[in-house]
Amino acid sequence: MSESYPDEWEGPDDLDETDLRLLECVDEDFDVSLKELSAELGLSNSAIHYRLNKLKEAGVIDGVTADVDPTSLGLNMVAITEVSVVHEPGYSEHVGTDLADIDGVEQLYYTMGDVDFVAISRVQNRSQMNRLIEKMVAVEGVDETSSRFVMDELKTAPRTVATLSEGMRENLVEDE
Amino acid sequence: MSESYPDEWEGPDDLDETDLRLLECVDEDFDVSLKELSAELGLSNSAIHYRLNKLKEAGVIDGVTADVDPTSLGLNMVAITEVSVVHEPGYSEHVGTDLADIDGVEQLYYTMGDVDFVAISRVQNRSQMNRLIEKMVAVEGVDETSSRFVMDELKTAPRTVATLSEGMRENLVEDE
DNA sequence: AATGAAATCGACCAGCA
DNA sequence: TGCTGGTCGATTTCATT
Image 1: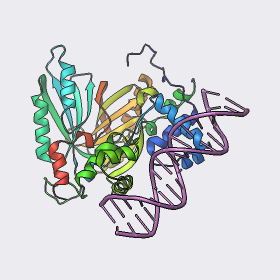
Image 2: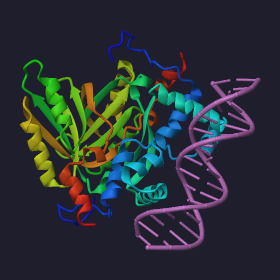
Image 3: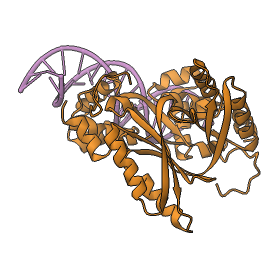
Image 4: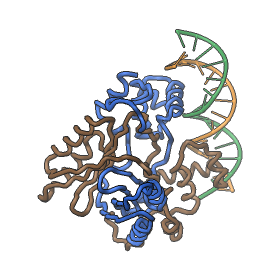
């Protein structure tokens, strides 16, 4: 994020419309054969393969992962926790990594404003959640925490490409 | 989540230690050959394949996806927004789906407490963010919103299995 | 539930537009 | 650079234990 580009700048990589459509497919489901993709995009198998490799090497695709359903592992309890730290310089980085290392913390954001960190955690039961919050409070530099329980996850995994607006899309393919 | 199980209940599926180790591998990186997995786990290729299929059919693995790096698409701006709704019965479901449908909203949680929804959104620039917030406010039933900008994402994609604690693991394999 | 062999599919290379 | 076609190696499937 240490870029000197203007606010309306779009992205470093030169993607064309085909790349974007390919990303839309595999961002949703990579468990498809090259055949299906080539049928969808009107290209040969090797062409798809070639483009996928290019996207991986460029870091646009930075991994392929199996999405594990948390509820099938009994991880039914989700909480969103706001963490504020004592305001002494240099603390935040340390606090951040300590918080991120706590088992059950799935996401951790460092934010502007009165609250300093927002964590999203997932556990199996109340006692685990209690222990998790205790660990957060015990991190040196943490001032106070405030948690909310999640009753429903209406939208979860970051399906980055699927949530692109038309405008965002245009910014990517227009000026490559 | 409409289960009548006690709080300490662990999970519906009968997983053994091998399944869990396999999940740990592919949850991190599915772009590996069966050879590597069979070497790691001491099983034949076909056995790995058999277990992977079983996990997919059981819904433990509910998909294989390519992880697209948002920054390579110029999606550098992330916000966490708290949304409260006017308290009239039956509003919440409608508001939830409307909010989830807004382009750029990657995650949406329905929570207990004074705030009703928490959204995590990702866009390319300030004007897109402004429009996104406007759309949220325009949703019928939304009372007010409060947004915080994310300065750093210390932990992002829900690597569910990777963040399991020892206790969570034990709950899964012990009593299958 | 796991194995090995057979059929199928994907990865890579050389060459071409 | 982006793509094609063919080859080899990998994966999927299936009969068998």
